[in-house]
Length: 308
Image (cartoon, rainbow, N blue to C red; front, side, top):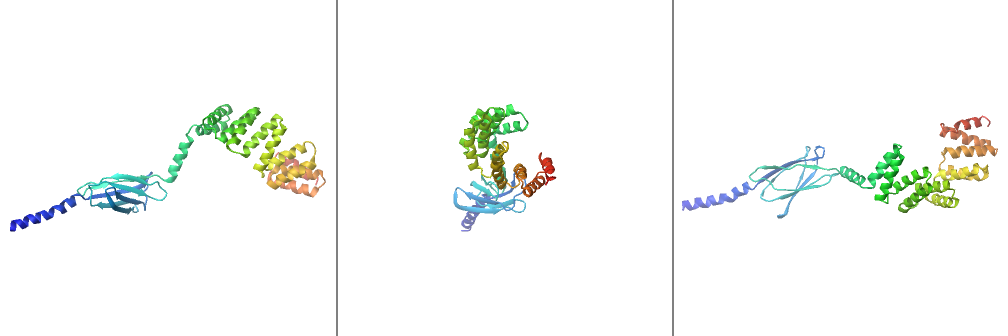
Protein backbone atom coordinates (compact mmCIF):
# COMPACT_ATOMS: atom_id res chain seq x y z
CA UNK A 1 0.00 0.00 0.00
CA UNK A 2 2.83 2.37 0.84
CA UNK A 3 4.49 1.72 -2.53
CA UNK A 4 1.21 2.47 -4.32
CA UNK A 5 0.90 5.83 -2.60
CA UNK A 6 4.46 6.80 -3.56
CA UNK A 7 3.78 6.03 -7.22
CA UNK A 8 0.62 8.10 -7.15
CA UNK A 9 2.51 11.02 -5.61
CA UNK A 10 5.23 10.79 -8.26
CA UNK A 11 2.65 10.87 -11.01
CA UNK A 12 1.10 14.02 -9.57
CA UNK A 13 4.45 15.82 -9.92
CA UNK A 14 4.77 15.18 -13.68
CA UNK A 15 2.16 17.71 -15.03
CA UNK A 16 3.54 20.59 -12.96
CA UNK A 17 7.08 19.75 -14.06
CA UNK A 18 6.08 19.78 -17.76
CA UNK A 19 4.09 22.97 -17.23
CA UNK A 20 7.13 24.73 -15.77
CA UNK A 21 9.36 23.57 -18.61
CA UNK A 22 6.91 25.11 -21.17
CA UNK A 23 7.20 28.62 -19.73
CA UNK A 24 9.05 31.31 -21.64
CA UNK A 25 10.12 34.81 -20.71
CA UNK A 26 10.01 37.66 -23.19
CA UNK A 27 11.53 41.11 -23.02
CA UNK A 28 12.31 43.80 -25.53
CA UNK A 29 12.68 47.48 -26.36
CA UNK A 30 10.68 49.66 -28.73
CA UNK A 31 12.58 52.54 -30.35
CA UNK A 32 12.32 54.77 -33.39
CA UNK A 33 14.63 54.23 -36.36
CA UNK A 34 17.27 56.43 -34.70
CA UNK A 35 17.37 54.26 -31.59
CA UNK A 36 15.44 56.64 -29.35
CA UNK A 37 13.15 54.74 -26.91
CA UNK A 38 9.42 55.17 -27.48
CA UNK A 39 7.65 55.56 -24.15
CA UNK A 40 4.05 54.36 -23.88
CA UNK A 41 4.06 52.16 -26.98
CA UNK A 42 1.56 49.28 -26.96
CA UNK A 43 2.83 45.73 -27.43
CA UNK A 44 -0.12 43.43 -28.11
CA UNK A 45 0.37 39.66 -28.05
CA UNK A 46 -2.10 37.22 -29.60
CA UNK A 47 -1.82 33.55 -30.50
CA UNK A 48 -3.31 32.03 -33.69
CA UNK A 49 -3.69 28.70 -31.83
CA UNK A 50 -5.47 30.18 -28.80
CA UNK A 51 -8.50 32.19 -29.82
CA UNK A 52 -9.06 33.97 -26.50
CA UNK A 53 -5.42 34.79 -25.77
CA UNK A 54 -4.58 38.51 -25.76
CA UNK A 55 -2.06 40.37 -23.69
CA UNK A 56 -1.36 44.09 -23.91
CA UNK A 57 1.86 45.62 -22.57
CA UNK A 58 2.98 49.24 -22.37
CA UNK A 59 6.61 50.27 -22.73
CA UNK A 60 8.28 51.99 -19.79
CA UNK A 61 10.35 55.18 -19.71
CA UNK A 62 13.21 53.34 -21.42
CA UNK A 63 10.97 51.87 -24.11
CA UNK A 64 11.17 48.44 -22.52
CA UNK A 65 8.59 45.71 -21.94
CA UNK A 66 8.63 42.22 -20.41
CA UNK A 67 6.20 39.35 -19.80
CA UNK A 68 5.97 35.66 -19.02
CA UNK A 69 4.36 33.20 -21.44
CA UNK A 70 2.99 30.07 -19.80
CA UNK A 71 2.86 28.00 -22.99
CA UNK A 72 6.06 28.64 -24.89
CA UNK A 73 5.45 25.76 -27.28
CA UNK A 74 3.34 27.98 -29.54
CA UNK A 75 4.06 30.97 -31.79
CA UNK A 76 2.74 34.39 -30.82
CA UNK A 77 1.97 37.43 -32.91
CA UNK A 78 3.50 40.66 -31.62
CA UNK A 79 1.86 43.89 -32.78
CA UNK A 80 3.54 47.12 -31.73
CA UNK A 81 1.68 50.43 -31.94
CA UNK A 82 2.63 54.00 -31.03
CA UNK A 83 1.05 57.33 -31.91
CA UNK A 84 2.74 58.88 -34.93
CA UNK A 85 4.42 55.64 -36.01
CA UNK A 86 3.66 52.84 -38.43
CA UNK A 87 2.52 49.68 -36.56
CA UNK A 88 4.81 46.67 -36.83
CA UNK A 89 4.00 42.95 -36.52
CA UNK A 90 6.19 39.91 -35.98
CA UNK A 91 5.57 36.20 -35.28
CA UNK A 92 7.81 34.91 -32.50
CA UNK A 93 8.17 31.63 -30.58
CA UNK A 94 9.33 32.01 -26.96
CA UNK A 95 12.19 29.92 -25.65
CA UNK A 96 11.23 26.91 -23.53
CA UNK A 97 12.53 26.17 -20.05
CA UNK A 98 12.36 29.60 -18.46
CA UNK A 99 14.79 31.10 -20.98
CA UNK A 100 14.29 34.69 -22.16
CA UNK A 101 13.52 35.65 -25.73
CA UNK A 102 14.57 39.20 -26.56
CA UNK A 103 12.46 40.92 -29.22
CA UNK A 104 13.21 44.52 -30.21
CA UNK A 105 11.26 46.77 -32.53
CA UNK A 106 12.30 49.93 -34.43
CA UNK A 107 9.25 51.83 -35.65
CA UNK A 108 9.22 54.20 -38.61
CA UNK A 109 7.52 57.54 -38.03
CA UNK A 110 4.68 58.58 -40.31
CA UNK A 111 6.80 61.55 -41.41
CA UNK A 112 9.59 59.20 -42.48
CA UNK A 113 7.15 57.08 -44.46
CA UNK A 114 5.63 60.14 -46.13
CA UNK A 115 9.07 61.49 -47.03
CA UNK A 116 10.07 58.12 -48.46
CA UNK A 117 6.90 57.95 -50.55
CA UNK A 118 7.46 61.46 -51.85
CA UNK A 119 11.03 60.64 -52.76
CA UNK A 120 9.88 57.48 -54.51
CA UNK A 121 7.32 59.50 -56.49
CA UNK A 122 9.96 62.06 -57.45
CA UNK A 123 12.13 59.30 -58.86
CA UNK A 124 9.41 58.14 -61.25
CA UNK A 125 9.95 58.82 -64.97
CA UNK A 126 8.59 62.23 -65.83
CA UNK A 127 8.76 63.71 -62.35
CA UNK A 128 12.48 63.03 -62.17
CA UNK A 129 13.00 64.64 -65.58
CA UNK A 130 10.91 67.68 -64.62
CA UNK A 131 12.87 68.16 -61.42
CA UNK A 132 16.17 67.90 -63.27
CA UNK A 133 14.87 70.29 -65.92
CA UNK A 134 14.01 72.91 -63.30
CA UNK A 135 17.48 72.64 -61.82
CA UNK A 136 19.09 73.07 -65.23
CA UNK A 137 16.84 76.06 -65.93
CA UNK A 138 17.93 77.70 -62.67
CA UNK A 139 21.54 77.15 -63.76
CA UNK A 140 20.85 78.95 -67.03
CA UNK A 141 21.21 75.79 -69.15
CA UNK A 142 18.08 76.41 -71.21
CA UNK A 143 18.73 73.93 -74.03
CA UNK A 144 19.41 71.07 -71.63
CA UNK A 145 16.44 72.09 -69.49
CA UNK A 146 14.10 72.06 -72.48
CA UNK A 147 15.21 68.52 -73.34
CA UNK A 148 14.41 67.40 -69.80
CA UNK A 149 10.97 69.04 -69.82
CA UNK A 150 10.22 67.42 -73.19
CA UNK A 151 11.22 64.03 -71.75
CA UNK A 152 9.03 64.72 -68.71
CA UNK A 153 5.83 65.29 -70.69
CA UNK A 154 6.64 62.39 -72.98
CA UNK A 155 6.77 60.05 -69.98
CA UNK A 156 3.92 61.67 -68.04
CA UNK A 157 1.74 63.94 -70.22
CA UNK A 158 -0.32 65.30 -67.32
CA UNK A 159 2.63 67.25 -65.88
CA UNK A 160 1.09 70.62 -66.65
CA UNK A 161 3.92 72.57 -64.99
CA UNK A 162 6.39 70.87 -67.31
CA UNK A 163 4.25 71.95 -70.28
CA UNK A 164 4.29 75.48 -68.86
CA UNK A 165 8.08 75.48 -68.53
CA UNK A 166 8.47 74.02 -72.00
CA UNK A 167 6.18 76.65 -73.52
CA UNK A 168 7.86 79.48 -71.63
CA UNK A 169 11.26 78.46 -73.01
CA UNK A 170 9.85 78.28 -76.54
CA UNK A 171 8.04 81.62 -76.25
CA UNK A 172 11.19 83.39 -75.08
CA UNK A 173 13.04 81.82 -78.02
CA UNK A 174 10.48 83.26 -80.44
CA UNK A 175 8.83 79.90 -81.12
CA UNK A 176 5.36 81.22 -80.48
CA UNK A 177 3.43 78.45 -82.23
CA UNK A 178 5.22 75.84 -80.11
CA UNK A 179 4.55 77.93 -77.02
CA UNK A 180 0.84 78.12 -77.79
CA UNK A 181 0.72 74.37 -78.36
CA UNK A 182 2.43 73.80 -74.99
CA UNK A 183 0.02 76.22 -73.31
CA UNK A 184 -2.94 74.33 -74.73
CA UNK A 185 -1.54 71.03 -73.48
CA UNK A 186 -1.13 72.62 -70.05
CA UNK A 187 -4.73 73.88 -70.14
CA UNK A 188 -5.94 70.45 -71.21
CA UNK A 189 -4.62 68.90 -68.00
CA UNK A 190 -5.13 71.98 -65.78
CA UNK A 191 -8.14 73.89 -67.18
CA UNK A 192 -7.94 77.68 -67.00
CA UNK A 193 -4.61 77.61 -65.15
CA UNK A 194 -3.72 81.34 -65.03
CA UNK A 195 0.00 80.91 -65.79
CA UNK A 196 -0.73 78.86 -68.90
CA UNK A 197 -3.33 81.38 -70.05
CA UNK A 198 -0.70 84.09 -69.54
CA UNK A 199 1.75 82.06 -71.63
CA UNK A 200 -0.80 81.80 -74.42
CA UNK A 201 -1.50 85.54 -74.14
CA UNK A 202 2.19 86.37 -74.48
CA UNK A 203 2.67 84.05 -77.45
CA UNK A 204 -0.41 85.24 -79.36
CA UNK A 205 0.49 88.86 -78.66
CA UNK A 206 4.02 88.26 -79.96
CA UNK A 207 2.53 86.71 -83.09
CA UNK A 208 0.24 89.67 -83.59
CA UNK A 209 -2.83 87.43 -83.47
CA UNK A 210 -5.20 89.92 -81.84
CA UNK A 211 -8.29 87.72 -82.02
CA UNK A 212 -6.57 84.82 -80.26
CA UNK A 213 -4.97 87.20 -77.77
CA UNK A 214 -8.31 88.79 -76.87
CA UNK A 215 -9.86 85.36 -76.41
CA UNK A 216 -7.13 84.33 -73.96
CA UNK A 217 -7.42 87.67 -72.16
CA UNK A 218 -11.13 87.09 -71.53
CA UNK A 219 -10.42 83.61 -70.19
CA UNK A 220 -7.63 85.00 -67.99
CA UNK A 221 -9.92 87.67 -66.55
CA UNK A 222 -12.42 85.01 -65.49
CA UNK A 223 -9.74 82.68 -64.10
CA UNK A 224 -7.73 85.35 -62.28
CA UNK A 225 -9.78 88.51 -61.76
CA UNK A 226 -7.54 89.81 -58.97
CA UNK A 227 -4.38 90.09 -61.08
CA UNK A 228 -3.55 93.81 -61.47
CA UNK A 229 -1.09 93.09 -64.26
CA UNK A 230 -3.91 92.30 -66.64
CA UNK A 231 -5.55 95.71 -66.23
CA UNK A 232 -2.20 97.49 -66.20
CA UNK A 233 -1.09 95.93 -69.48
CA UNK A 234 -4.35 96.96 -71.10
CA UNK A 235 -3.88 100.48 -69.75
CA UNK A 236 -0.37 100.66 -71.20
CA UNK A 237 -1.75 100.11 -74.69
CA UNK A 238 -3.89 103.25 -74.25
CA UNK A 239 -1.11 105.23 -72.57
CA UNK A 240 1.17 104.56 -75.53
CA UNK A 241 -1.48 106.18 -77.72
CA UNK A 242 -1.83 109.16 -75.39
CA UNK A 243 -5.34 108.03 -74.46
CA UNK A 244 -5.49 108.83 -70.74
CA UNK A 245 -9.28 108.67 -70.67
CA UNK A 246 -9.40 104.96 -71.49
CA UNK A 247 -6.24 104.16 -69.53
CA UNK A 248 -7.47 105.68 -66.26
CA UNK A 249 -10.29 103.23 -65.40
CA UNK A 250 -7.96 100.31 -66.13
CA UNK A 251 -5.27 101.72 -63.84
CA UNK A 252 -7.91 102.21 -61.14
CA UNK A 253 -8.98 98.58 -61.56
CA UNK A 254 -5.36 97.49 -61.21
CA UNK A 255 -5.07 99.40 -57.92
CA UNK A 256 -8.40 98.05 -56.72
CA UNK A 257 -7.00 94.54 -57.22
CA UNK A 258 -3.70 95.47 -55.53
CA UNK A 259 -3.57 98.88 -53.80
CA UNK A 260 0.25 98.72 -53.67
CA UNK A 261 0.90 97.83 -57.29
CA UNK A 262 3.69 100.35 -58.04
CA UNK A 263 3.46 100.58 -61.84
CA UNK A 264 -0.26 101.39 -61.76
CA UNK A 265 0.25 103.83 -58.88
CA UNK A 266 2.89 105.79 -60.80
CA UNK A 267 1.02 105.86 -64.10
CA UNK A 268 -2.27 106.88 -62.48
CA UNK A 269 -0.41 109.65 -60.66
CA UNK A 270 0.91 110.91 -63.99
CA UNK A 271 -2.55 110.70 -65.56
CA UNK A 272 -3.98 112.78 -62.69
CA UNK A 273 -1.15 115.30 -63.04
CA UNK A 274 -1.85 115.71 -66.75
CA UNK A 275 -5.54 116.13 -65.94
CA UNK A 276 -4.77 118.96 -63.52
CA UNK A 277 -5.72 116.92 -60.43
CA UNK A 278 -2.62 117.99 -58.52
CA UNK A 279 -3.68 116.87 -55.05
CA UNK A 280 -4.58 113.37 -56.25
CA UNK A 281 -1.40 113.13 -58.32
CA UNK A 282 0.73 114.20 -55.34
CA UNK A 283 -0.93 111.62 -53.08
CA UNK A 284 -0.34 108.81 -55.57
CA UNK A 285 3.28 109.71 -56.35
CA UNK A 286 4.20 110.09 -52.68
CA UNK A 287 2.69 106.70 -51.93
CA UNK A 288 4.50 105.25 -54.96
CA UNK A 289 7.90 106.48 -53.69
CA UNK A 290 7.18 105.12 -50.22
CA UNK A 291 6.04 101.74 -51.59
CA UNK A 292 8.78 101.28 -54.20
CA UNK A 293 11.73 103.57 -53.36
CA UNK A 294 14.08 101.65 -55.67
CA UNK A 295 11.71 101.57 -58.65
CA UNK A 296 13.18 102.84 -61.93
CA UNK A 297 10.53 105.59 -62.03
CA UNK A 298 11.14 106.74 -58.43
CA UNK A 299 13.49 109.52 -59.54
CA UNK A 300 10.92 110.78 -62.06
CA UNK A 301 8.23 110.81 -59.38
CA UNK A 302 10.43 112.83 -57.04
CA UNK A 303 11.14 115.34 -59.78
CA UNK A 304 7.45 115.70 -60.59
CA UNK A 305 6.61 116.35 -56.94
CA UNK A 306 8.76 119.47 -57.07
CA UNK A 307 6.16 121.05 -59.34
CA UNK A 308 3.16 120.24 -57.16
